Image (tube, rainbow, N blue to C red; front, side, top):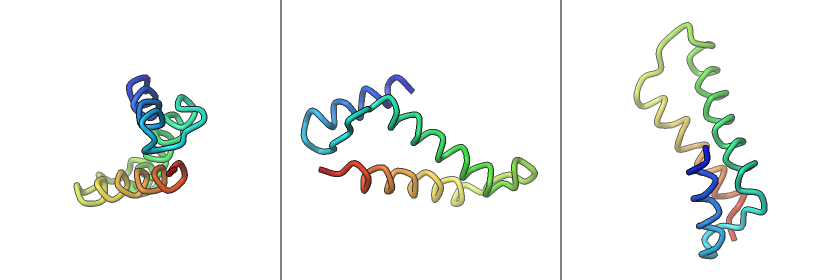
Length: 70
């Protein structure tokens, strides 16, 4: 989590993103991935296929970039 928050801070410093609170954004990003993974796996009752896991992560990343784009 710490590295993710630092990366969001670096991306903000470079002008690629505009994240006012990188630590909170990192926690929210991870929470979104975990929640969606749990939902897609029916709360752990079935394994996620690789393409499903990839889609969860890519969707969360897309949302983060759209939310914090400059």
